[in-house]
Amino acid sequence: MNDNKWWKNAIIYQIYPKSFKDSNNDGIGDLKGIIEKLDYLSFLGVDAIWLSPIYDSPMEDNGYDVADYFKIAPIFGTMEDMDSLISEAKKRNIRIIMDLVANHTSKEHVWFKEACKSIDNPYHDYFYWSDKPDDKISDFCGSSWEYVESLNLYYYHYFAKGQVDLNWTNPKVRQEIANIINWWLDKGVAGFRMDAIELIGKELDKNIFANGPKIHDYLRELNENSFGKKKDSITVGEGWPTTKIAIEYTNPEHHELDMMFNFDLISHIWKNNDLEKFEPNIPNLIELKKIFARWQNDLKDKGWNTLFWENHDLARCISNFGNDRFYREESAKALAYMLYFQQGTPFIYQGQEIGMINAYYTKLSDYQDIDSINKYQDKVIDKKIVSSSRMLKGLQRGSRDNARTPIPWNDKENAGWNNGATPWLKIIPNYKEINIEKAIANKDSVLYTYKDIFKFRKESEYRDTIINGSYETYLDDDPYIYVYKRSYNDKSFIVVVNYDDDNHELDLNIDVSNIIMSSYKDSPSSTRKVILRPYEAIVYKIK
Ligand code: GLC
Ligand code: CA
Image 1 (cartoon, rainbow, N blue to C red):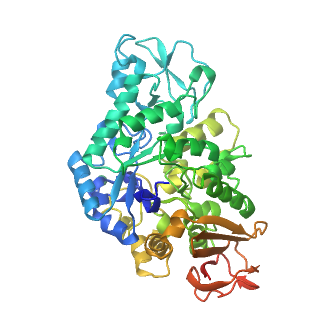
Image 2: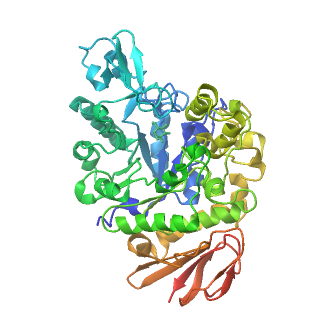
Image 3: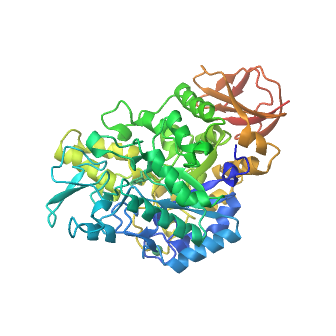
């Protein structure tokens, strides 16, 4: 199955440009800032950057509302900057993956402006219209329908008012998207992360949103007309699939996408609470094991997995799944061991590699995210279903801004992120302790755990085991200790993690030879009746 694909063994690093590095001291991260830090990314072992949107945009949702797919947002730089980012990255063997926001455009896009001129305008059918809005609610609160006076009609938006859904039933829309993809591929980008792609087959009158009946036809057509022609391109879809659905999208014989993100962990977190992600329901280890096993086993030889803990929409993983107060570094390392020896393509999100934690802002005015602000308004002010203090606590757990704080590069003014201008989003107070310079200087830091794992995946004798090996688990009922084995031909290793803040005994009847890596020094050299310390994680070679 496609074993020669470069992305099966690539490390993909997500950059949220607004927060990565501000090169011209205007308080907003930019493309030149990314170029400045490419050497750092190659030091870390990154093969590709997934760049969150940098296109021209009114920034109602930080660029996920595109006004012009062929222009760079002035706050981020120019097309020349983009060209030099692509070529400078290439010099370091780093590919660029764009974020394709094709479920919707900004209401500032010329297509939409034209569409509002009259119902006969050739762009009118690029969007969804209704003269009788029903009760659909948008993802960022309020009705999904917005009135346009000039037409006496309502347009449909799944997300914010400024993010107007594109009508994929219109073949012209599908051709426009293929053109955008081809234009960027010609420029030298490697491929696309496809935003909210599962929604493009929606059938509004039937209340079908995700995974609509036509979606696979659309993706096959897009594949044929654009990225499918470039054999070494990469596509990764954003959606919330089950394993069965993920296989439909990613089975190579289907000619749709290379891989899909899997949000099973996150669906679990959002369940059973009034406040969903704002009062997260964190899975215990036994539940986590089941989720991991489902994805590792179901997709084996049928599709392809992505491995990720974080992105720009989620809380920091240590704050959700680890212990960010007392075992920040230990739990950060444990989480890395738990996931990144599995089968699939690893994605890491900026700052994850140094163990950044949630922002823990205390005031509503600290937040910039439209989702956080609208949900506060909706639940606290409009519907009065939660108190302000409960919601503020909730934002500390679930706001998307938790992962969007500017990257701390050192312990100087504004964390070395810029030269002192007020950042668009507050820098987190712990930057003197958690910053990239400090992490590089300390060989025991979280950063070296990531760096070592990446090296192991790509350069060790276990490279093929990582790509193709089987996934087998032990001690499935143990609530504290996670053990998985990867084997391929004659090469096997096991990963052992104590996922708890207490010591626990491991008693596993397997003959291990030496330790390949471990998160503590002097870890036990056997797995029989030994004590593992809090969050201790070890990879053993198997005889
Ligand atoms: C995706 C993006 C998110 C954005 C939304 C609408 O979920 O990751 O940041 O708000 O789509 O484009
Ligand atoms: Ca800037």
